[in-house]
Image (cartoon, rainbow, N blue to C red; front, side, top):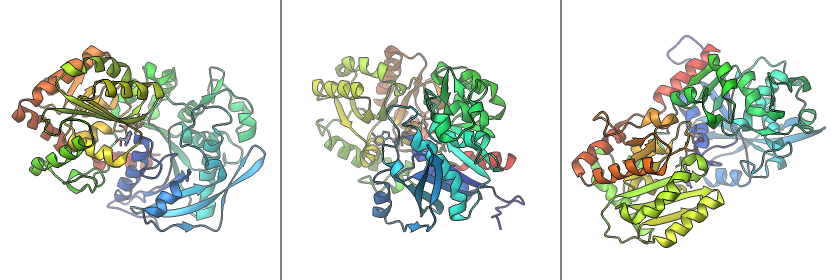
Length: 487
Ligand code: ADP
Ligand code: GLC
């Protein structure tokens, strides 16, 4: 019988369908959400499970982390390009959430392709078909498929427009984490290979400016749409950062819900974080000094430096504001702070950061790549967290930074507006903000933060406000539960 939690209504069976999953295949915040929201939903009584591809190295990480893996005797199948593609189903219990890792030669590449075309989208369409077939292999029938971004958008389309899945009574929820990525490509033989009904290739369904657009299809085909902050829900009905999809989203606004992301409070917890040299909380902030010292040890900076440290942990892409950060690096030496960047992404951004680090060895340090332990040390050892995004659907980094006591400097956009309030505006701020997307605007707020840092009492007030915010999933998980119940 379905679980009941303080209510007479049975819980829904929900399958999360996600191409990335922290900590096994995390690329950015989507991976965090795909791992932490199900955990929170479970606590709210939702019967939730997760399916994800076992990209190269993922099963090793699962086993190295000590999880017990159960491999089902039955495989899942998909019919793609006139052949049957099978995948092995491995079940792992991750914090109580049954999680299925699918192993197949088709999942042999990167989590995201560098180029989107009818060839490179194959693994994602196959993944969605495998997810739809999972119910047979594991004998558990989802009532709702909860899809995330374009990589699982094919599933919503298949439920609506595919001859093999159209008869299923299940519903789909599509969460828009980033509308800038849509899975759009020339049609080629995609419809024939995937089995989607060719009649759906029209401007009211899957077609967009002459191409296939999987996200557009899912926006139209899904039962409900959510996005990751209330502000972004509003922006994507009007904004250019949607690559022209805004009118489609506007037309579907009746089923759109802006629900603010949370962060996993067990994992992102400075009071119990094994990656820090010393744990700390609001009542023992002085212990933060150990993280600061260890962070500085990793850099060429003078160990006795006691001014502000500005940190940034980010994918190195235009979205994150590097257009306006890079020109500011020329003024670095006059800012009165030291900067540490960690990230990977576009080569031209990495090159510019590398060059700046070699020209300003005393004030800028750049760590290329993805580094989970170092990211924790930066949140815990940094004073100011820089996130001047061009657009930001939600942003988890600024929330993590605040929980760890680093004060955010952000642009007023998307989820950054919903989480950061300027310290100079209402007296109750937890960070520093600016509106106009330019270097001067960013420097104006950065300078205010750097100046305020010198006033320890005022600084601590701002920092404590951030640390005391509730960015857990408590509230938002209930909103998702209620949404599932309503459909
Ligand atoms: P996005 O999903 O757009 O990248 P978010 O702020 O929502 O942005 O989430 C980013 C997540 O990825 C955070 O958990 C952040 O700490 C992590 N992250 C980003 N880049 C790196 C990196 N180079 N090393 C470690 N963690 C990273
Ligand atoms: C996307 C967005 C980011 C959001 C994350 C999780 O990667 O860029 O703003 O926080 O998804 O929803």
